Length: 64
Image 1 (cartoon, rainbow, N blue to C red):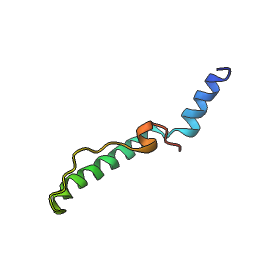
Image 2 (cartoon, rainbow, N blue to C red):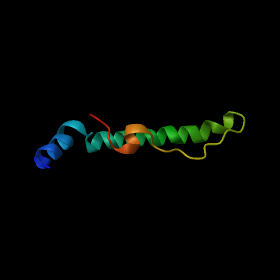
Image 3 (tube, one colour):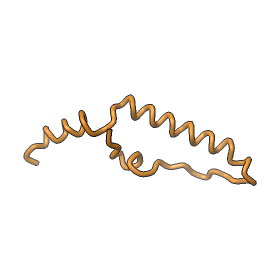
């Protein structure tokens, strides 16, 4: 790629979320999963089998 260094800099500094924001997001996702697992039994035996990241979070393409 002709402008690979410029592109990578743009992605890191303008597009992608900072490490702090990614950590906040991961923490919030874990909290939601925890609450769902705790409260699932309140709904007639509902069980949370698996929780997986979705969308841009899963694809690691979140835009700032």
